[in-house]
Length: 418
Image (cartoon, rainbow, N blue to C red; front, side, top):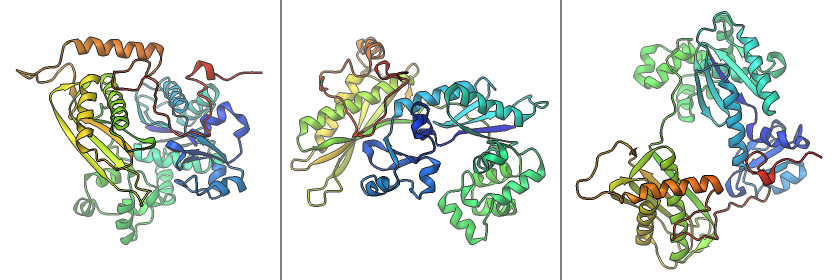
């Protein structure tokens, strides 16, 4: 059996843990630079606040409905997610962290367990130890566990936030209830194609012949059908190293001078290099993006990119930063006000196992230097140590006018009990 544990309204719930005054009130969490709504409490959904609503257009809406608006507090959310996932590991060794607020659990050898009580025990422990409410769906497959979770979330009073699909009757009833658009893995395009065939529910979907699905779709849809039929085809996935790493951000204001842009790109490249070292990878290629402000139609527009292929794989901040600066210099245009830049490192290989170049190799001193770099930044805080082409007094900061304290990750912002 598989379980899907999903944190309810995770971002809003994290804020409510440390600010109980937000409980039972509409809460909206904004994206980077306070752009648009990316998370809502149930109360915010009930008053009609849509996902993705631009904050500047909904200022009057927020005021009229007394919506509590908050900037994204990613350090807090990331730390709370780690706490939840560490609790889940106490219930089974087989766990797949699916997203920041979701995880799949597999129960092997739990034949004599009352899984409904076990799911409630999971939920209660997470709530007691972290304050985060969760919903638990348990079923024979991952896709059915998703369906069970939706039922638990939709009917909390009837299910006590835990629902188990452990019989054929429950499976059929659940599939007839859930709409095809709400099935895990059914995107908008596939939904439209299925609706043409008058497929409105998950139960309608599993009535389609296997041969027809194979001829008209792919192996992915066939596996999904089997999953909904109660036949496991999707195993838990082990954590994977990323195939590419990106740092793309908007500037705090538009820049038309090359020096400012070079400094920003150097900082983004250094960030990518740090992420490479954390996962034990080196890159073969660097991709640099540079974009003007598309919202200012009356100014010259320029959206461009270029790539640099390195002679040898590297994770050195010095090498990657210099290559990124050379790249952005080649695509920069005078007279254009740039608003956004990005650095992507790709062609990743393991740092401890890659093909060497007979004639060109990295300076061996870089390895120990980068190790000291990372250790000092870990000990004293991010960005305390920088390379020379970065501004020592400057750190990239998003517009976060409604930011709550980082209660669990910054000692000077820890919650105070009066």
